[in-house]
Image (cartoon, rainbow, N blue to C red; front, top):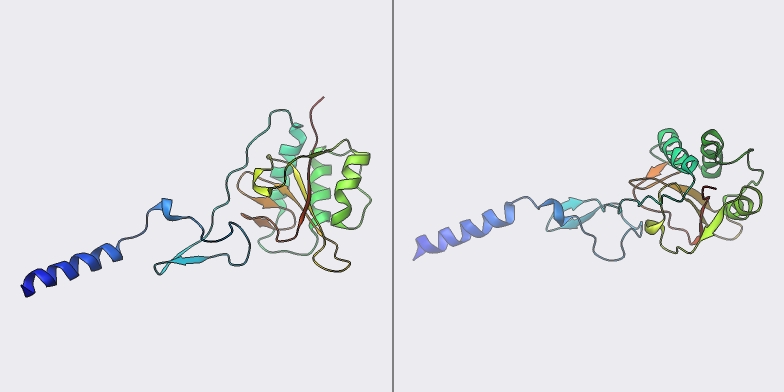
Length: 179
């Protein structure tokens, strides 16, 4: 009897000690809320994975190039210069004809639509934004400058790269279509 109980306890301990499969990378609570970059499931630490971006064939190919440039130039952590880095990526890729003039990131959407031929897409989830689109967020508080980032294949890039979106409220998703 004790022998069977011992083997039963040993088998249960072996099942608990097995590594979790790759499909165990799911997130309890609101996905990508930014409250924690890691979470624990039975003592194992996992990082949430953002869904991969879809490519819209109608979009201007310069925006895809801008996404690659932004991701290549991005730092691992923020430098508080998101709109400057996105401006440079759009200019180097040829998506805009001149360096944008606005100072604050929350003003980026209105300038892109009025001066550079961008349109606002009817998308309200940052993870559904197509590859190369520009996402504009409101300021974090009273008089906040906001945040702007470009959707990359595996996440988002501005002055820093991240697999999940900014915590601020999304103002709009902007893209430019080929003629």
